[in-house]
Structures are given as structure tokens and as C-alpha cells.
Length: 402
Image 1: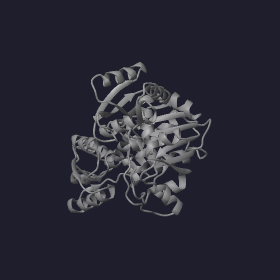
Image 2: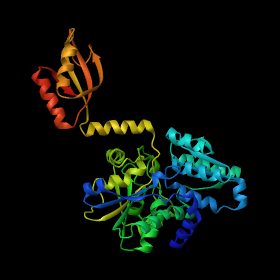
Image 3: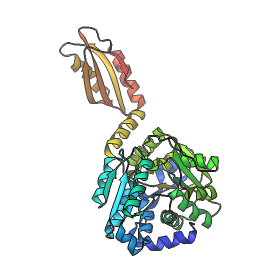
Image 4: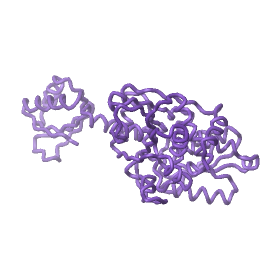
């Protein structure tokens, strides 16, 4: 069983090798939400996530024989890096099974930390099945990413650090995948301060823990694709579900747009890089999912290993959503000087042109005319409206390209 004492023992065991990550007040988020928001920045760990705590605690408890035989794990990325880093650092051979769709940044990092990576399966469950098969064949020790008491105890050390830094919180808001993180933190919180609320957050694409709590038993949801790939778990842990049932007050969900916006807001306002799974708790707070006002909330930013290609798309979509990036399709006569006049009209509105694309055959373009798609930077929706009004005044036919 996971107990407060076991979590305290884990804290002593891993203390010298794990970063006591900052737990800092966010003035921006506090003002936006009407609460006092404190961010626990686990994305600053060596491998970029909280997973190091549980993986290291498990590794340090291995017998000499288990160390000699090596370890194996299955992971969508963060647990893989944690096991690879801490096992290799201690001379233990590590083999990791990762889904085929795992972001390249996580695969590359896992290999760089010294593990042998096997890409297999369409999702975590299929990768896990292969890891369990290899465990039997090669007699390795399997390190589960969440459904293991020693792993949960390691993750729970985050709760000890949060309460030691800010003891008068009203609630903690925690990302939920398989339940290892929230199970450990909730145990610390409720055994120490029973009146403090514990709120879990999942993606609406895969709310497996929420569904299991409602059903009062294990459930398995269909696989789904989400930008919060680190918590894309179809079924919660056998050992973690009882912890959540006992200690967690509520589980809420956030959608893909809310997660993407949280990633962008953290990056732009807090200068903090996070991935989808790492941003779900912040997304819940920013969108009022916890229902709090005037409260002191501890929010875990659990991981920051985001693929740069995905990040670039999130940034671009966020700029469009905020009215800072717009694409207009403008019809104009196809003769010398027409583009100069259009560019001048745009420049007069202090709008910056980012990209252009001509088309003389599609979009209902008449012979002798052209349609030009222009992507532009603006200051917001009012600025875009001013630009469109100016184009109307110059007689241009135009439309927004969504």
C-alpha cells in the first residue's frame, strides 16, 4: 500500500538526485482567475518531467540481482526518459518500448540517456504488452509508469514539497493519466491536511480515471489521439484507482483547444515551456473548471517535453485565435502595379505581411483577375476590422480564410 510514511521514505531516498522544483506564485494567472495561483514547475526536472521521482525510487529499491538483469519499461515518452537516465547513470541496462507515434523529441532523448528503444504498437497499451513479453523472455524487472506502489510513492514527494513551501493552500490541481501522480500527491495532502481539496484534470479525449470513478470499477476506453499524449491512458491503474477513490475530491476535463491555449499562455506570459499533458491543470484553472474564486491553488505543471513541430502549430493557432494572425483572400486585377497598390493600402493600416500566395484559376477568379491569399500580423480583432474597412474603401473584394 502507498502510505504517507512510504512517501516520506521515498523523499529521503531520492532527495540528492531530484530537483526540488520551484513552487512559485503566478501574478498573471492569479489576476486572470481571481485566485492566488502557485505553479509547481516539474517541467524543470533533468529529463523534463515529474516521472523521474517514481522511476528513481523504484530503481533505488532494486536488488543487486535485479540490477544485474536490467530493467524494461513502456512509455509514451516521459517515463521512458526517466528510467533511461536514472538506470543508465547507475550502470543498469534499460530497454524501453514506446508507441510508434511517440514524438521524435522523446524518442531521441530516451536513446541519448542510454536506453535501447523499441518502437512498437499504436498506443501505450500495445507498447506495454510488448514490454511485458520481453520481461518474461529476458527476465528483466518491469518498471510501470504509474501502477506500482514504489513509483506512486516517488511521485507523492511532489506533495511534500508543495506543502512545505506553501502550507495554507485551499486546493491542489493535478494532471491525471494512469493515476500515479495524483495518487501519491493526494495521499500526502489528505493525510496531512484533510480539508484541502484535491482536483484531478484529464483530457476530454480520454477521461479514463473519471469514468472509472463514476463506474466504481476499472474501465477501458477506446484509444483516442490527443495533444496531451503523456496522459493518454485508456485504463487507470489497478493500484491507483483505489487511491483516487479514497483521496481525490473531483476530476474535471479540458478539451484540446483549452490545452493548446494553456501551453501558449504559459510560454508567452510565464516563459515556461510545457507539453499537452503538463498543461492540463493550468488549462482547468484558466477556464474556471475548478469553480474557485478567492482561493489559494497549487497547480502542477508536470512536464515540458513537447515536439517543436507541434509547438509551432499551437503558437500559430493561438495567434489566429487572438486576432494576431489573419489570412485574407483578396481579388484584384492582374496587371502591373496592382499588387503595389494593394500592399500600400495594407501598409497604411500598419499591418505586417507574413506570406502571400497567388491563384488565377480557382476561387471563382475571372479571366484577367487574380486572387491572392495574404497572411498578416495584426494587433487584434479590432485592428483586423480596421484593415477590412480600409480594403472596402479601396474597392477590394475580400474574405477571411479560416
